[in-house]
Length: 106
Length: 226
Image 1 (cartoon, chains in turn red, orange):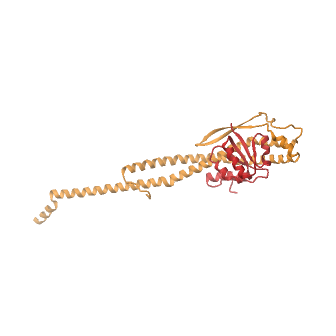
Image 2 (image 1 turned 90 degrees about the horizontal axis):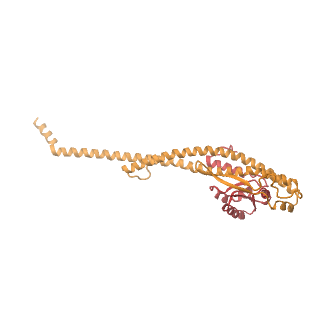
Image 3 (image 1 turned 180 degrees about the vertical axis):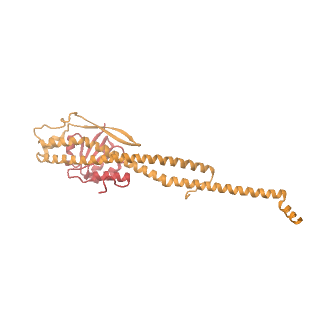
């Protein structure tokens, strides 16, 4: 039985606790990196991470990209949408097709 | 273009021919795999894009609700209200195999089955804005999970497509031409050897016949006597 974790600054994620996800408030990239590794090795199948924090943890996140579990998904935080999530999707298209054909290159 | 040295022998020729057959067959199979993966990937990534836009909009709205809720309450009350969550979400994962890529499938279970039974606080000391905020986030949850599934699948498939494409290209532009060149080189060399053996034999035969019957001397004698 797997669980779901949410990582990010407290203001962005405290609401998720109410709907039953495990929240881990942190803003320090180093601490978040350790936390991410710990969570990935225990039974968390999905880890949501705020875009602001995900930006600083790119190497760690890429490390888990080729593995089936966990799925690490960036979500917009309270400070607004940085467009990183959509940029990631665009990156997958570029990786697979060779050029961006879904987003029309804008 | 035989860059690597191959022995021009019949055994090597058979080996290279087998290699070519395998490479051609593998190339065809991998090309089909790539095409099918690509088709599925494009469908999935379109879905992913739509889903992400939807989820991001919903989360932004939920965050706004939470900001409003916070504004109307003190931090302590809010913390106490959300301190002990009532709801818990468990995930079951299964694996779906799409063209040899294992993509995860999530099904989720909640501890309290009733969607209205998620509020972990009494309603007396909290504002109704908090209820709205929690509700809006709870409504986002199914989409959020679907996004996780979809996005992970896209990640895995993109990696697999890249790998397959490289393999197809390597076979098409390196392996197959090289093997063909090797085969050509060996056949030429073998033909050449055969011709040279043939000529040598003919020459030897000529010399032996000359030794036995002295054709040249007789011809000279005949010429003299005429």
